[in-house]
Image (cartoon, rainbow, N blue to C red; front, top):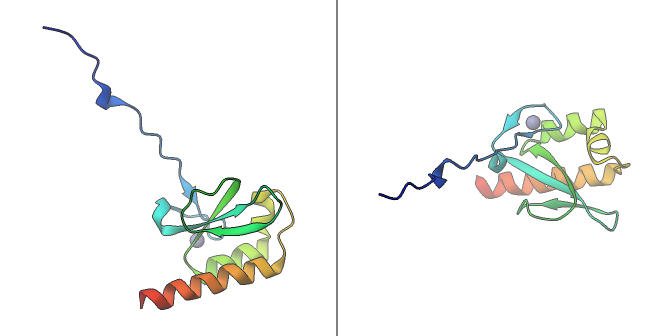
Length: 101
Ligand SMILES: [Zn+2]
């Protein structure tokens, strides 16, 4: 008999994704990722794979509003985030909600 290490025991490290608006941890699927692009711009990253520093928000307008109020995105991305970008996220969420309905 050959003793083998059981590779199935690999630790799956799931980093919690916390909404910067309400502070709730959600599985990644339930959150929108926004990313600060290397060129200094911002983008909504529906794939969750874009390079750059990311922040997460629930698919919920209220969370965007809360984040805007607390400048949570600026704090999380360590850069000034223009209000127009919050508008962009809100519009994105509205589009998503419409599609779901
Ligand atoms: Zn939230």
